[in-house]
Length: 400
Ligand SMILES: Cc1ncc(COP(=O)(O)O)c(C=O)c1O
Image 1 (cartoon, protein in one colour):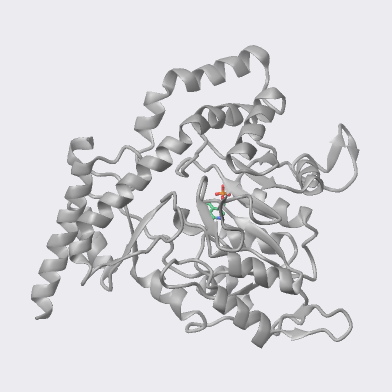
Image 2: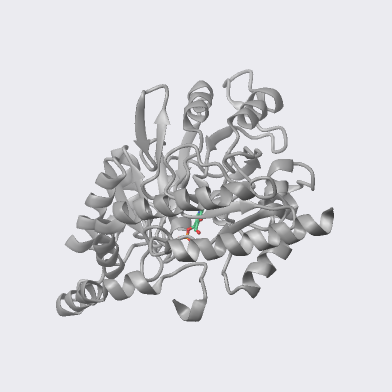
């Protein structure tokens, strides 16, 4: 494929395979002028809610808006502190700060790359103080009450939700899932003795349908899922200028709707999502098998719950050289993400410094995302493994 190139992502094949179906969505939209709202949007919302085992879904314009609207609809805003991780895409924090709230970081778990529940416990119990009157936990940096936690289900794997939910319950915190990379991921709750879907475990959850996601639009799109009818109603108002009835604005909202063409496209693709996720899992199993012999020199990220492998990430101390070697072999890779958020220029004012979140910093310097998509062939995966093997062997020779 592509003259022997192995791209990081293949967004062309699935769209060519679905060309007739997808263009039909567009044809129906122009024949009916059904561009905003209506049954195409509502049908998708209903089926995506079902897919996530959640009661409600509200389509919005992108994942960042989904997270911001979810927080706002849950009553989070100015004067509140929201806890999340520094090892995520910047949108997680943009949504928090743009809701009016302040952000506090806790480090991630090296094995899963997700929020470390022990670090969350340490922050809540050892760093925060308790307000004598309200009993609320007060963030030591901001002097404001901690109101919410946003775990990110990074790379397609859900965060360790049982202990995080326990802490939220104990301290009266609202849990909003950043499920933007985890459409269909599942977590086995020891507490409930059952599997739970991403998007069904928090007060609300945010999904992104950016084109490269496991379920991706042909443009920008996102959604909020929730079991809370009032939150669903508020998100629907926030996405539509604060109105539930045309030109009667109860609050100031946003232009944050999911358009019907994207909803129709997503609905077509939703029928394939379980199969695509299964194909990604097969690819991940294959990577694990063929890369395991290199485990002495290459760290494979462990995915403990039922991941949907939005990304397949490995770690190597000489990541830049490994990436350059793979590029020379016409193999595309990515880095998700090279600079943890507490060290980004945009968040200099938060006052964090290098060394504050050592696990996130270590991951950022070593991680490399390999090609991963449903149409990735065993031969392509073998070529990736061979090229990594060459690098690892050459490096081992150089260092002896
Ligand atoms: C973890 C995470 N959160 C939030 C977002 C924001 O989604 P969007 O790009 O649709 O606004 C993304 C998208 O890449 C993401 O990966």
